[in-house]
Length: 62
Image 1 (cartoon, rainbow, N blue to C red):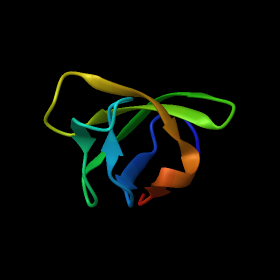
Image 2: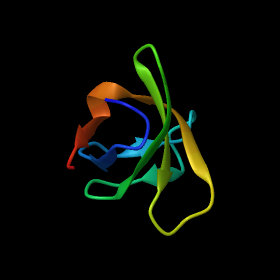
Image 3: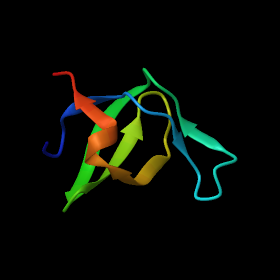
Image 4: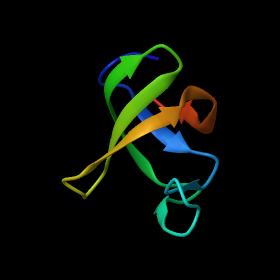
């Protein structure tokens, strides 16, 4: 996985307390930054990015 890859979420991503959904299964976005096993993704259609997503929660689609 590298910067610019188009990805899809195949696990729900919630906030640290587990109450707020930041992304749901099927949402798509682009990788903005990669460091170790964590990724920053900007979801399509939204200006805010989602930080600290495990690589195992994403699937490269392009």
